[in-house]
Amino acid sequence: MNQRYLRRAAVCIVTLTAALIGNPVSAQTETPAQQTLQLTLEDAVRLAVEHNPDLAVVRLGTEVEAAQVGQSQSAYNPVFSTTLGRSSNIAPPSNFLLGNSGVDTNDWFSSTGVRQRLRRGGGTWSLSWDASRTTSNSPINSFDPNLQTGFQLAFSQPLFRDRAIDSARQQYIIAKRNQESSEVRFRESVVQTVAAVKQAYWTLKASIANVTVQQRSLELAQELAKQNKVRVDVGQSPPLDLVQVEAEVADRRENLIRARAAAEDAEDHLRRLIMQPADTGFWQVRVNPIDEPAGRTVLSDVDAVVAKAVDTRYDVAIARNDLNNAATNIEFFTNQKLPDVRLETSYRGSGLGGGQLLRAGGFPGVVTGRLNSGFGDVLGQAFRNDFPTWSVGVTVNYPLGKSYEEVGLVRAEIERKQAAQRIASLQLRIAEAIRQAARQVRSTAEREDAARAGATLAGQRLDSERRRYEVGLSTSFFVTQAQRDLLQAQVNLLQATLDYQSSLVSFEALQLAPPLATGDTIGISGSSVVTLPTPTPRGVFRQSGAVGFQP
Image (cartoon, rainbow, N blue to C red; front, side, top):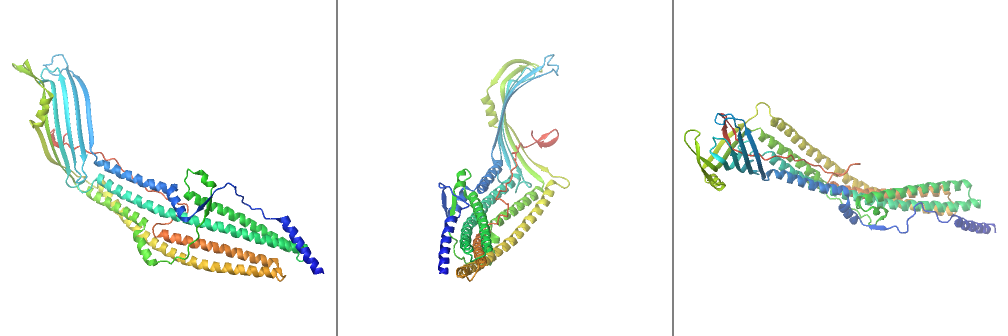
């Protein structure tokens, strides 16, 4: 009779306690209108490639390098130049024929030309045409007005220095190679971004699962607390048992709050990688990763993977381009050590006309008439070869003492050795990293198997302990301990699963690109192009008893 009464009382107390306690209030509330994005891993990668601003920076870097190539090619563009002007000069009398009057000279003149640097051989050519009309009151002039015109064709060809390679070709070769490096760097950044997105995706998946585990653990603790309260109220358990269980409930509620905060952080991290920067509303969209981890992956021959990666990985390709750039610099400075010997040629046709003054008598004579010729006659003289002027010669320049080019060659050789050693060091790091990543895949797979077995046994132990507790063969302490063990085993399983997926992502990415260290961002490495004016060849002429360039 007493047992039946106690059983009925216990049922009433349990019912009353359940009514008073009710369902626990969730620490995280959702807005009813909040949107949820059901996101697959493939969609996450696609959104990152389309929207990630860091990747867009690198993509624009390839366009910058392409513009640099265009800048270096501009050294070979034809250069058009023209001058049009008028001058007036009144000179004081310096001749007894002028008397006290000065010489008033007025001049209209123009000059137009085109010059260009050749892509092969380092030569330059120029074609120019000039014309002038001059009036003067000088008594000794033969023409008034005086019309002159002429055209000139000149060519300059280096024979040693600058023939095989010059500054313009050096810049173009290096700019072209840097453009290739920027395209490789973009592909490298895509691999790094995809790896980061996959890592963030599986981290969010594990964080959400951890919230579920912590929520279930809290519910188990709350259920045990209800049972303990009933037992304490009917005198079957000491009040200390209830205090201990309620403390456990508070601890697990704190764990749930931490898990939810970690899940929100993981969600924001994935949002940052895949969202379009202008779409600020995307921060309010819930992201639900719906893909499940794939099964076990059988690793290919690690040695074959390493052998391929040390030769074809993107950072190795970039380092090889740097080595080739250093070799180009050596070729350039070696060429610059040669003497500057140039073949200079030019041809000029001239014409003269205007109002020719006819004189009679002694010097300076008396003007007796005028013979006029137009500008067309002057042009005819220039192109009929009436007054030709030509030149051909060689110029030689050679520095005495240790030149800038010799010092530059020493520096370029050192830089080439550094670039070669960087490639060797990089290949060693690649082999080590890939072998370590393969071991990580194997070890995390074994950890996942062990953690899954541990979670299964922990669940069985909790069920056994709960049945023992219900029949009075165990205490709340042992049930609580079994719940803790199950929680820890489930968290370990989540962590092992996440580590396995992360190791697969790393092993795949390391075969193509280096990992991003903590705090690093994908970026670009730019180059610079210096403006190289096109020289104007004019031939060689004797000036003041010396041989030099015609001004």
